[in-house]
Image 1 (cartoon, rainbow, N blue to C red):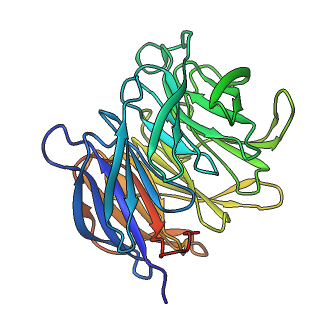
Image 2: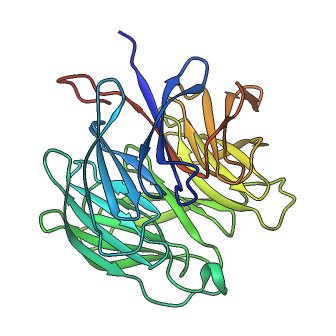
Image 3: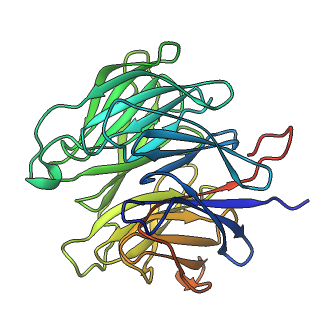
Length: 358
């Protein structure tokens, strides 16, 4: 039996043009989404799927909302919880789906929420506000927490703050769900560290800077008090041919086999594709090409690694491309589809009864 995949797209709903989450069937072979329905969530600014593939979590005005992913790909609302903070901009679960981490751009707060065994949202276990001043008025003048992930060893939580140009490192108590600050990656002034991700083997960390438009590659090793994180590469520009000084890197994603890394860029509205060496972790630019839309706030890589969807917040659209690695090209693989102010997209395998999704 062929695996079935779904795509879930979070959108702002304040203007009444979208309900919050749009549900699509995914045609992996043709590289396109097929509209199914919409689900109501107030201003779904970010989505994530649990590691066991059974739950979808969405940021909302009310905090965080949990949905069960049914066998046909439909969503069944389970519960929601107030996070005692302003609406977040990023969420992630840990590898065991015991906690969810909510990053707050507007209030500079990182919130930890316990998840119950059935996947529903439990109580807030900790919350920390970042303090300090950045280097530039507006965007990097005060704390703006933009991304957080538990480290592969489970001992720490890394929290990127593009407002104060730091990635804070917290020791994480996996029983109590509490945070203790132990160190920080101090980034260049006016760089804006926005999004990061680890390789599956836990050996490499990829950190993308919104304002400086670069990607840093680090090696990662665990430690008792602090982890050992060393920079081994800097990609000088995520959009090397850009014409606009307003270019801003938006997000990074990796193909399922981790042979390629992708970065979307607003301003010049492009996606950069990098080859990744699994042994060294180093990146090599393959191409940087336009995405036929405005403000690619997110990108979704199809399970086959041969297609991508660009989530174009500014033009209210999603555009689809086939990635021609040998020719170093992105080729449109179908017509763009309309969706109001999309923020985020996740593609996931539908779980089957009695079996966890990969």
